Structures are given as C-alpha cells and as structure tokens.
Image (cartoon, rainbow, N blue to C red; front, side):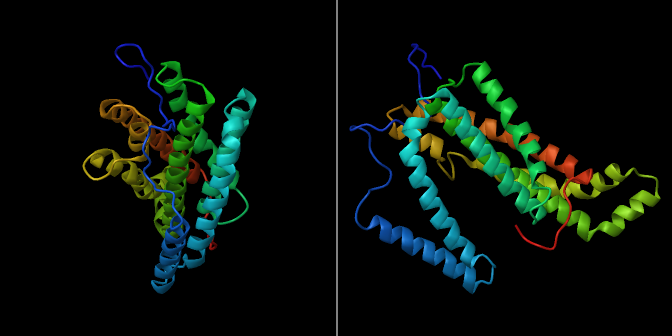
Length: 269
C-alpha cells in the first residue's frame, strides 16, 4: 500500500531496534508455553473432547515448524523460485490437512486443493493486479499464507459438515431423489445449509474487529512502525480478502460434496 504522500506501507511488520515487541523473550517464556500447552491438553482430556494428545502434538509441531521457517525464511524471500516453491509447499500442506479433515481417510483428500486454490488464487490476483500488495517475497508469502490458512479452515469445516449432514440425512436425500431431483440437486438441498455455517467465524471476526479483537496484521504492522490508520487499512484489506477467499472455498467445497467427490467415513482426520 502507499501513503497519500507516496511512501509505501508494508503489509508485514519489519523488526528494528526501535520497534517494540508484543512478547517478551525471557527465560520464563518456554515455561509459560509448556504450561499453556499442558493446560490445553489436560482440559481436553478431562472434558473427554478426544483431542488431549492432539493438543500436545499440535503444539510440538508448531514449535518445530516455526523454528524451521524462522531459519529459512530470510533465504527464501531472496529468490523468486524459492518464494514460489514455498507457497506451493503451503498449498500442498493445506490441501492434505483439509482433505484429511473432510474425508477422514487417505483417499480423496486431493479434491480439497480445488476449493483452496479457487479461493486463494483470484483474491491474490486482485490484490497484486491492483498493486495493493507487491509481489516481493516478504509480502506475498505472509499474505498467501493468511489466505491459504483461511481457505483451509473454511474447506475443512464446510466439507466436514456437508459430508456428515448427507450421511446422517441420507433418507431425506433418497426422498428427494424419489421426487425427481437430480443426485447433485438432492444432495445440495441437504448439505448446503449446514456447510454455510463455515463462513460464520470469518463473518464474526470481521464484524467485531476493533471492538473485541485486534488481529495479527493490525498489531504486526503497528509494531513495525506504521501509524494506527495505516495498520487499520492493512487489517481491513486482510479481513475483506479472507471473507472473499473463504466464501469461494465454501461454495466450491459444497459443490464437490454434492457431486460425490468427498464421501463420509467413520474415521477421523
């Protein structure tokens, strides 16, 4: 983005000796992280949520992956091909994660790549085509990551809800078929209302921004030295882009479910 005077505003925070830090890196930081991870796992286990172990493994994976990214990101952003490769890696992981969450198996997960790409690519094209963001690695990687992450969540939630709804209400689908509905139309009537709820988190985040939460993009740009107005503009762009990307991803996901590309499974992802 550019200021009225012409100076550019980066969409990511740039660390400097003068910038403040949101998190104080002290000897007690690892202790706090371990305690919080253990608390989450303990509550999940005591509450019989079925994700006690998952909380621990997710925290360990996050620590490892962020550590690796922190080491290689400086090298990645310096080379165009490395930037493309990194974004493709993020896309592949997002596809596998969302697909496994929807199907609960190791088959058919690749269909999740379609809604994730359908949501991310056109939004990125609009942002870069209008020069709202630059195509430099330090900008395009975090923005692509935000969009891919949003589409991952939207695809997983919409797909899971749609598949489960069709499985639980298969009698209604058969009734619709007996009335002359085409298979795709009969499935759509049942699964679309349930899947539409996957857009609610993004809607609530956008509706309550500044009143309930100050999301990461706003805080990051503010800590990077930008003015509150500039940080607010950046956050607005991110939230609107996420809404557009996730809406597209959900529509494509529902279409795939209605056409039988995703099927119900007794397993969990």
